[in-house]
Length: 384
Image (cartoon, rainbow, N blue to C red):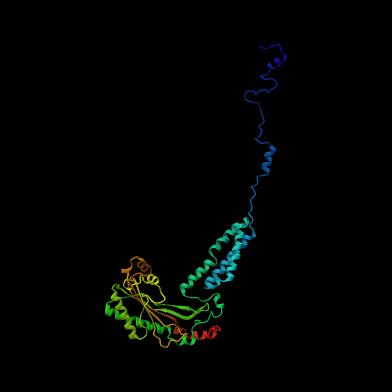
C-alpha cells in the first residue's frame, strides 16, 4: 500500500527498498554488473614487492681473536719440539729448566685464549693439544723407553762435565782394563753353575729348568751419563723339585759349599736369612717369612768371588746366591701370591734357584773403544 508521502512514493519506484535511512542500498540479486575486482593487496605495494625481491637475512660473521691463533700455534710448535726430543732420546732435555719454562708460558697463553670469548674455540683446541703432549707425558714416555732399552745416552746430560766419561767415577781406569772381561766372567759363571747343578743332581736327584736367559746392561758413570762397563746376570736355573725338609736344605747348602771350594773361585756361603748384626728380627721376618730357619719360607745364602788380586778402585767381585722357596711355611698365602705374580709360565713356584751376577765389566769388543774414549773424554779433574 502506497501512502501519500512523496519521499516514500519516490523510493517505491526503485527495484529495491532500504529499511534503514542513510545506509547504502543492498546489492541486487546476482550482484552488480561489471563489478571491479581489487587485488588482496594495493597495486603500489604489490608492484614494489615484485620489483624488489626479499633479501636473505644477513649472515652473522664470527670474528676470531688473534690470541686464539697464537695459542694454537704455540701449542703445536711446543708439542713438535717435545716429540723431536722424545725421538732423539733426550729425556733429560725434556725435564730441563728451559722446557719447563716454555711449558708454563704456553699454558698461560692457552688459558688466556680459553677465557676470552672470541678466541675460545681455537683455545679449546690448543688446550687439548697441551693436555696430551706436555712435559709430563713426553718425559714419562721417554723414561719408559730408556728403561726398556737400557740406553741413557743423549740429551742435555751430554753437556754436563764428565757425562761422556766411559768409566765409572770411583774406579781406577787401569784396574778396569786389567780386570777379567765380561766374556771371561760369564764363561766362568757358566762353568761353576754347571758344576753345582751336576753335583746336586747326582746326590739328590734334582732336575733343572732355566728360568731366565742372561741379562746385561750398561752402568751409569756417576757423572749423569752412561759408562761402557756392563752389569751381567747369568742364566738363572731352578730345581723342578721342591725342597721341604730342613735337614735336606742344610745338606744342599753344604754340598754347594764343597763345589765352590773345589772350583776355588768363591768364598764359603753366608746365610742372609739368619739374624746377624745390623738387621732386626722384624726385617728378617719380612724378608724371609720368619726368624726361625726351620719354619722360614725363603732361604738365601750368598757369597762373592774370591779374588786375591782385588784392589780398591777395581770393579766389584762377582756375586752368587743360592735361594730356596718353601711354600709349606706360607701361612698367610702372601708368598704364594708373590711367586705366582713373578714366575713365568712353566717356572716352579718352589725349589732352589742359582743366581750369578757381575758388575762393572768391560766387554772384549769395547776395549779399543774404551781406551779411545778415555783420551777424548777423560775423568774430570779432581776425581783421581
